[in-house]
Amino acid sequence: MKDRPSHHPIFEILCYALSPLLILALWEAGVRLTVIDARFFPAPSEILGAFGELAQSGELSTHLGISLQRIFWGFLLGSIPGVLIGVSMGYFRLFKMAMDPLIAAVYPVPKIALLPLIMLVFGLGELSKVVVIAAGVFFICTINSMAGAQNIDRVLIEAARSFGARPLSMFKEVILPGATPVIFAGLRLSLGMALILIVAAEFVAAKSGLGYLIWSSWTVFYVPQMYVGLLMVAALGILFTYVLEWVERVAFPCRATRTQ
Image (tube, rainbow, N blue to C red; front, top):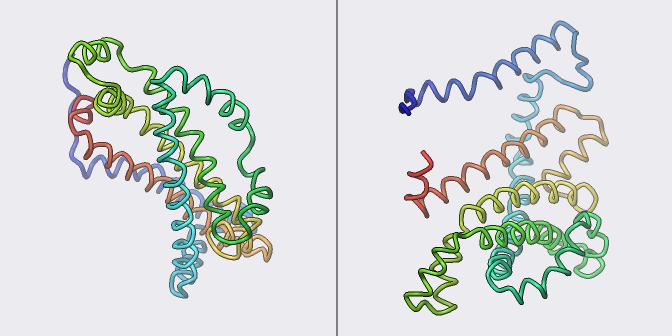
């Protein structure tokens, strides 16, 4: 097969930006020509003005910082045990048999539905928001990590055993690295879930954060400000995806080279 032609980085950036810019231009034109109802879909220029007001007052950075802090601790609290337990379930059969019923029973329950119970146990403060994020992140990381460990080539495992690898060395040197691609896929899904959960939790149980900004703007029908909150959540989703991809490339450069 012939190698695909490489394009200049600036050309690739323009290609990525073309469709969003085109949509924004059509949106702006539709509002100005009264084809689009500005009450529900304000012009991008009006949303940009609301963004400037929030940024200048410092309100946007405050809400953003609080949401990021909650996401960070919830993601950390859920992903680390999720990865370790999931990989252990994929490698140790008896451990999987013990954990499977618990995972199967609790995973289908919408995590936001657990928020009232979590608030009863952990109170109305910051901890309850962190715990509800951690709960959603934990199960996604666990299931993906288990799948990654189970799909490792058995030849690698047998080769390590033939060289006398002990269970702990096998776990650290073969199982965990071999499951890494699926683990990172689970981490990306988990960050998306973390964003969903923090916005939902801040709708009903917070007085700050991006979710609160969206909800409070809706209650007073300040639609441009509501769109600012929505766009910030979308921007965080994009940022999280690229940051995790960068971390994976830095941590495992040989794997990134093979996929190019």
